[in-house]
Image (cartoon, rainbow, N blue to C red):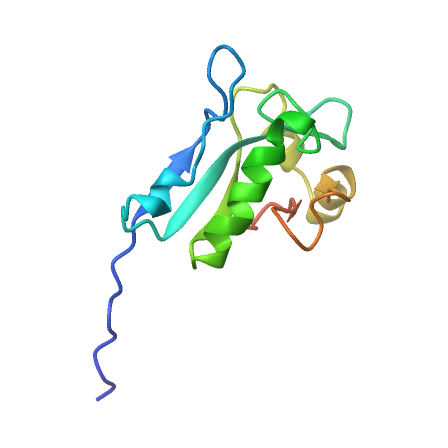
Length: 132
């Protein structure tokens, strides 16, 4: 009989509000500096807009300078072992419509990788069955 698997507790959090109403960045560092036990963080929401290829984090390009602090802090969290992922969806019209159809057309119309963020931060290739 195979050994019983060891289950590791996980604390998964979701962060969609990245700025105060006045535009000040909201730090994610307290999630680790306050010893919350966080193991996973979903950064939200990645929107698939019209035309194809117009992908935003909430209402702005992921390369927008407003996200500089967020991406730096994401690297810091990842360095502590927190798994950081992106959440696809949200209120943008078309996010789910553009994910329907055959896999080839979905991949062609919805592939995104930020030059600024490649190999360092969050990148995504959107496919119908991919879990980010």
